[in-house]
Image 1 (cartoon, rainbow, N blue to C red):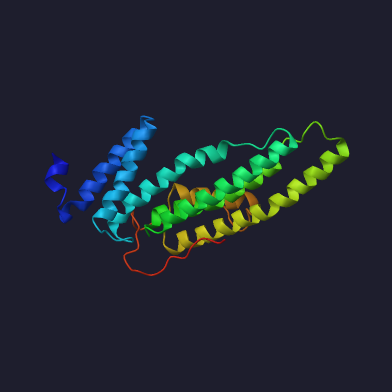
Image 2: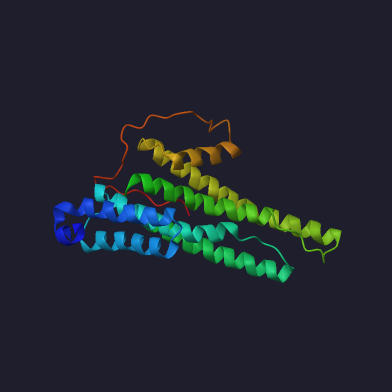
Length: 231
């Protein structure tokens, strides 16, 4: 009844999007993945069909929906481990690189909605993608077919390959926390960023119990450019 009554009423955009998103959240909670994904897509499609603007208060709904859609595929990336024979490990590394690139592209799409809470969440995940890739390289199980010298050489190559991704992760986290502080954002995602930075540099990034956050929902009401994350 609600959708029939308000489907074409621009004054009810927020009520409609909020209702659709609520349904998607419930389906996600019930682990009904296919239906949840479809409902998240519906949120995005309704936002676009109604000609609503990024940076508006209404943008929080498609921003969350887009983020949650990427999260489903992030889980598969997070779980994939580099193991097996040397040739197989090389194949998995290439698969991870391809997946990381695609996930980063999709998290960057979340930034396009210009709703700060979800922008910070996406920025965290972009850094997290790099950090996870580095950790996967550090955690590689050395092939038993190698002798000790070969294993030492391979381990050194993996460690050297991992370091640039660690540095990239740190750069993304630092960028994200800077933007969060500049815009007075404090959510579970900023806490994750702060914690990640604290692990590598506790002196510059100590952990605090609370930070001041004046508004519960942050969006970009002005059309200034929120920069993309570091490459």
